[in-house]
Length: 326
Image (tube, rainbow, N blue to C red; front, side, top):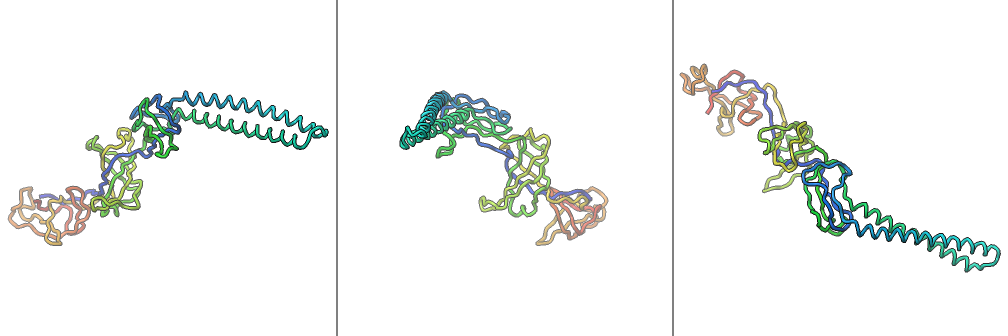
């Protein structure tokens, strides 16, 4: 037997899934080449701007030197074309030179200008490409996966296949659980509700969180519709979690502080009716098993929240009354 009591009870919805970083970035190379050095390893924290991967740069350096030499040569040619044009204009003004000669000098000067701009642009492109030979972190984070090794050939992000994936970084220390909730339970879930997150790696340890996002459309899995829910982990000890850990969240959708509560084993069912058996006579005054001088009293009840092995009684039973268990 058990005594009906007043206690706090919670309605919970479970979302099962995995721990994910709030930001995840794929790092790819902007240039083709061979990986010369990988500066980081899996799990290592990195700061924004830190070098991650070095691509061989000798060929680019040689091409840049050639381009810079072409820039110098084009600058010299431009100066001579400017001097020749100035002389031609002076002679034309005194009548010592024809319009055709002046126009030819002007055309050579403009061509020299265009050539200087062209080789300057080539040098700028090569200089930019050379800067890309050191791949740097775009944000503070942690290396999730290193996809390449020294000596690996890489293609640029502009290639047809999207380029070679070098590294995967997680963002800052913010983590969340991406879980699935059954379509019948999702109606109870709202953004902002508190949640308790557990992961297999930490046993019964609980991490506090809250519902951050609910997918607007469900996904069909094995003939059942589920909705994806993001649970932001707000616990100060979030650093002890790692991305891709399996876990589940208990979303607290309703709380009753002073509910009439009995063990679920006290419930009896007959058709659509739910009832309990109240201990009477000798059985009501002791913890002895069922079998007092009077048979148990059968009473219909209305149930509310079911929390594991406890049930809220909305009507039909008062605190202090004793019920018979199976």
